[in-house]
Image (cartoon, rainbow, N blue to C red; front, side, top):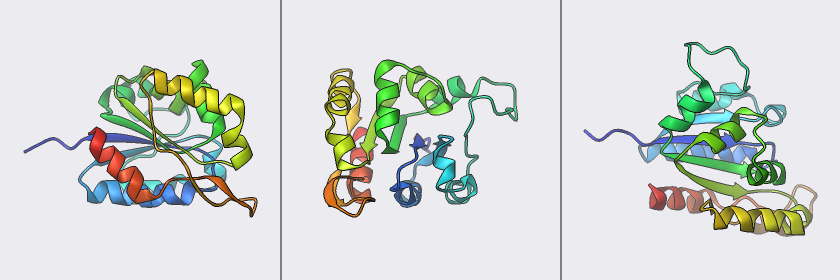
Amino acid sequence: MQKKKNIILGVTASIAIYKACEIVVRLKEAGFSVTVVMTKEAEELIRPIVFQSLSGNKVYRGLFDAPETWEIEHISLAQEADLVLIAPATANIIAKITTGICDDLLTCITCATKARVLICPAMNENMYQNRITQENIKKLKTLGYKFVEPRKGRLACGKIGIGCLAEVETIIKEVKKIL
């Protein structure tokens, strides 16, 4: 029997966070084990219990939460991962990863993992097209990080533009291709 592939799903504070729920369900249906890591800001938009119920696994949040067992969580999670998928990924998380800032659990896992990293941006069009954001994405691509580009659609501000999280099906196809 083949061991299930482990996916760390990093969830950040984008209005597209509700699609992360569908991503968890679809990954589980495809036979993957999914562990969700939420940023503190993401918890302002959705409660961790939702992801725990959908994934069937503990949701990891704070870098300094008391562990249930003695282990350095960001290292053990990073080592167990076959893929780190960040969806939705804000401009903030992309910038922190690009510059090596490790000030939360998700950025520490991303820095410590030897697994592939797949980033799915979701943000306002102006933020996505900002030269700094585009340079950050370009740099990460040259370092081997993979991206599923955002699509054009209705943004949280009400305007139509580029920055909507890619379709869930597109993200799932890319995960399967990588793994």
